[in-house]
Image 1: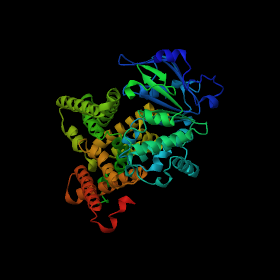
Image 2: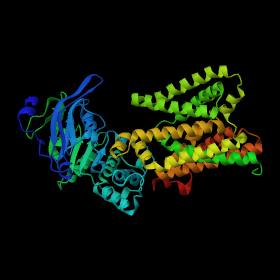
Image 3: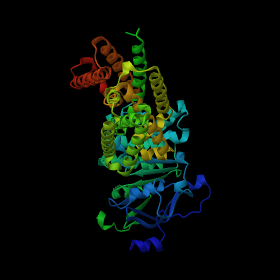
Image 4: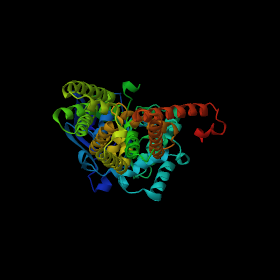
Length: 257
Length: 276
């Protein structure tokens, strides 16, 4: 059913707008017939989709469906076996404008549970792509970090150690780090896993607020279809090795029933 | 004590290593590769035995073996990322096996034994200069790439999206750690070097409130242990390498007990410090 939908109908989030310039087009991810195999097992097969700029797109699907693989393909960590994937018209394996991309990895919060760094030190990482690895970040760097923390509601915790924070707060620190360089495209890989309902609501609320200006595009991998429906502009489902759009009003798939 | 030339050289070599080993060790510990030092020092013994066998300077043999071992660990780690510690166990076992096999052919075992426990009070002028040069090079690398190493310790995938060439940084780090450990094995002993890499960092993890604090405090703890250990070895006739490590371990025990008392509120005014 969904396969036909993919081919015959207009997909949610499938803008297919022609690429004008890097700045205009950067906030758009486009995949054409992308296939990826891992150890002989087909993970993604002939996936074609595009993510519209300035929108909050949620990427949902079962465990092992290939959501995180898709993210790794988008950021160029993995190369597709066939097909092409681009960020703002630039092939993902050649993408180098890292200052325009913010990324929150899967299990990032769990990895930071005992990490011996302050909130500010962690958020400063987000400026490395913009400022380089050697240039002093200075006062302006400090204010950029404070702005990012304010955006996620953690401005009072900049000197706190990560291990003193809750899982939800650590996750927002990771989001602040991704926002510090003021990127145009944010990619969040299951940022709310392991967070309670209240923390998840707060996180989704912050993320949906990031797209209101229309300047920032968010792609968020999540299992939380209910909140994705409530907060996201578009929903894409990874299922049966393909990527489908979940349109408004469409009946939920059996695995979410 | 410092009027003796051998103690002067011991202090210079010891203090350079006390700065270099924990500086590198912070990244090793945060990447959950604490046993790397053990594996590399075991492999350095194989290099020493190989060097003695073919008639080249054993320290150069140790360096070559450490470089090969570091690349081996990194290769296995990438192949089996879920069980990164396996890579260390495999390389350590191979290193010890090779060292044991080659040692049987070297004939003179005294030189090999000097690498087991080191001989910091018997280092030559050339070895002291080597320690200073290699130690400074390792510290310089760690300082120049401190942001990249910090970012990669947090998450390597994240580092990639910060524009960091993780492969090159990892290679540079592997070379730095291999060089420092191979020269340290000569000075403080292959069986002890990994503790100097890890124990000061373990102490600093208990006391620091930030990443920068962790780096500074690890070096301070290592310097204090080295000065204390060398002084104790001079006045009480102890083995210097062993005395340094015992000093570090004692420091860690004191810190852990102190932290426990603070947590239980037994240290009055310090009781709630960690919650500020």
